[in-house]
Amino acid sequence: MSDAILVLNAGSSSLKFTLYPAEERPTADRLLCDGEIEEIGHDAHFVAQQAGGATLIDQSVSARTQEDALAILLQWLDRQFAQFRLIAAGHRVVHGGSRYGAPVRIDATVAADLRALIPLAPLHQPHHVAAIDALFKLHPTLPQVACFDTAFHLTEPSVATTFALPRQLIDEGVRRYGFHGLSYEYIASVLPDYLGSGADGRVVVAHLGSGASMCAMRARRSVATTMGFTALDGLPMASRCGNLDPGVVLYLIQQKGMSADAVSNLLYRDAGLLGVSGVSGDMRALLASKEPHAREAIDLFVYRIGRELGSLAAALGGLDAIVFTAGIGEHAPEIRRRVLRDAAWLGVVLDERQDAGPRLTRSDSRVSAWVIPTDEDLVIARQSWDLVRSATL
Image (cartoon, rainbow, N blue to C red; front, top):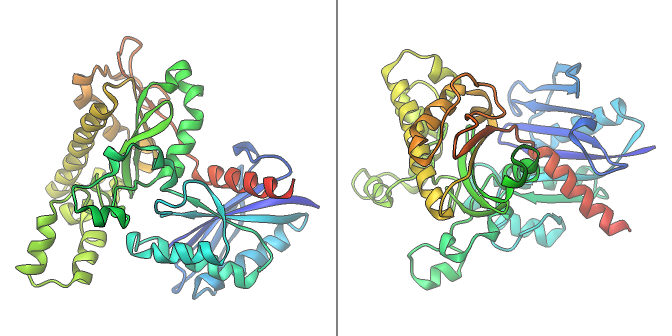
């Protein structure tokens, strides 16, 4: 029997997964399958495919909770991949606070720490914790590993993470954390394949998806990032507001009479591209729309990327390369073109003939630009494999 590692990413109504063989350290070309159970609690649907794209399952299932979905997934894996024995499950965990700068095997103490961080990532953390609790119940002997989206940014200097607040609050952990670290870690690991010796230079990576952020790297380590204390900060996102004057929150509470919960719902679920456009938070729908407000939302998104790019270039003391990744970054050439045209002042010379990449700039461009697909699941699988193997040697 061969070993395998299961990677889990639990959402509010979904459970995404990938399965990797684990006789050796996982690689992208050895993926066994990936898939998702979506619409948990409603009309749940289970779909999975092999690495080559062949469908393994595509059917409705009865899953009212994360525990139901996990039970269905584990039973299916036992049947479909009976020749493999799970040696670990690696979880994407959005927030690790300032304590967790590396992946960690989950025990009762770690689980309690993750639960305490729920207020800092209310859209994601509760569902990660629910999946961890459910898996302990269903498979109590299976090692579980937490892999953190915040960990990559713990290399940032304190001047980049400190708010101008009373020292007591800073000491209590009110600071900039940054997110999307698993994606940035993957991009950092493959930069030499694209940039060669330039990989250790001054690079800004734009992780542009329904959640969006940017990260300044030097020597492939995080120097500054756009997200802060929570995943609300920085760029406008599908339904999250991005950078916002805190006075707006005070206004909503004091003058509009909104409760804290109502403000939270507004900023997390009703703002961003959805709020500005009134059409959708999905960039594909906005690009296809003829509604004027849809174009305004796109314009704002591109403008904010340009503003943050200038800020991150300042933090780096210059710029050598720009990398686009994630859903919008990888699949929306119009957004990439507009951002790069606006960045001409930094020394970017766009190659108008090159939409698909990987290189998007001309050979004479002082700053190169690239599109590089990310692979957060592979990072989680490798981190989990490393941790479990080191414990068994």
